[in-house]
Amino acid sequence: MTEVIATNETILVVGGGISGMTAALEAAETGKQVVLVEKRPYVGGRVTQLYKYFPKLCFPTCGLEINQRRAKMNPNLNIISMAEVTDIKGEAGNYTATVKISPRYVNENCTACGDCAKAVEAEFDDEYNYGLGKRKGAYLPHRMAHPQRYVLDPAIIGTDDAQKAKDACKVNAIDLDMQEEVIEFKAGAVIWATGWKPYDANKIQPYGYDRIANVITSVEFERMADPNGPTGGKLTRPSDGKEAKSVAFIQCAGSRDKNHLLHCSRICCMASLKQATYPADDVPITIYYIDIRAIDRFEDFYQKVKAQENVKFIKSKVASIVENKENGNPTLHGVDTEGYNRYADEHDLVVLAVGMEPSVDKASFPVEITINEEGFIEPAPENGGVFAAGCSSDALDVNRAVQHATGAAMRAIQVVNRVAATEG
Image (cartoon, rainbow, N blue to C red; front, side):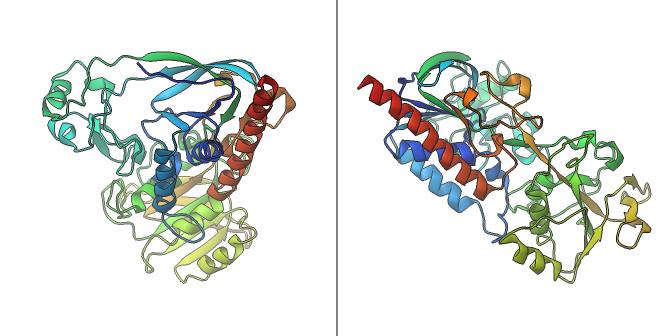
């Protein structure tokens, strides 16, 4: 049974991505008691799924490892994974949170040896790699997962595979009798850091994501580029597994569009510029764009990518994509708005720069909170002691999300400080 010792001076952080981790650590390192609730089996969020950051093209693993070490060393921070906050009642300084915890079927004895995974046969789509590969029914979500503990897929519970996993474990870490738990605890302030999700490319019908194999999303491309990803770092075509000899990026795929996302997601231009550096120098790359939004320090990076001989920019909102049935190549149709020339350009692989939208739907919030028309949380007095952090407040890059999360931690600390002062 999960036990949480919390008071109305505790800070609850909902979501354990880069923003949630930052807010939780900043608060915990000031001496505040923090409970972080994360629905995935691990913390780190979508940052763990990135291959590189822009504009320095460095790897997220370094900062991720530092945050994980900070979390392990801080006794003020209690992380509950595979859990969701289903209800929050009360007011600033006096909330009661209800949390549902899903069974992991693996306890803290786990040494992450992997014997359970070797024993099971069932495979499932790997959500960490956006379904581009398979994972076993017993799995470690990714190599740097924290907690470093395996998970059993609930679909294998009650099957021979589950017993095989249990029998293979030498440290008695498999517990097939684990049940869903519901717990309640107090909190004085809440930091909402549930992050973002990629816009559903299936909704952009003219681009054919649902029917053309070689049209993929930017998040899928990012996992493909990672040497630890589903293709071992090879940028291959889903249709035939051959390496792409030409790549096109379509900007604002579903963003700045009254039929999809009204807002600009801010990161998409920079993400595509970053991804344009992934293929070999002899691979032709075409970026179809409305505007390139590379402000401040990102302008230099934009100019650097623009100077690459293999990169071409076409100012155009692509109208439609059709498939060449003979070779599986997507063909892009549209008009170049600088020269007003019609084009029908064929590419081996097309990457849709899909926008960011909040992970939590407007109707799914367990607490009354002010939300704008795009689904992001607005800073408002009516929110009381509930504060948005990172991409739950707006579409932000990692740097700005971390800054925003630090601010959210400071506001939450002020609330619980007032509680302490009142009670003192």
